[in-house]
Length: 56
Image (cartoon, rainbow, N blue to C red; front, side, top):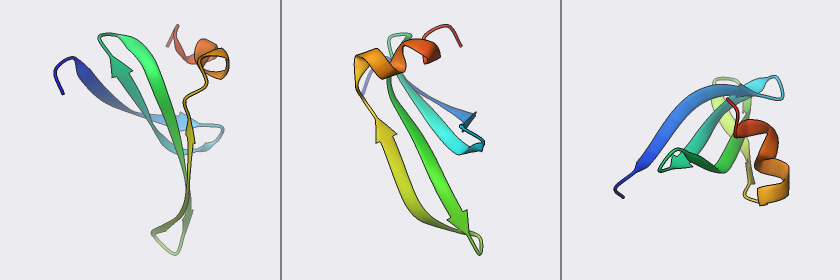
């Protein structure tokens, strides 16, 4: 997808990813890790909850 950037970040103290479309944060992912495996993935797409990530 043109204009899509994926950034590795710590999200609420957990490994995560930030997806940006043309520089605008559109999704924040957080991963719960146990025994070197991803056991749970949280994704936030609500624009109101993404506001803190827009300045990063």
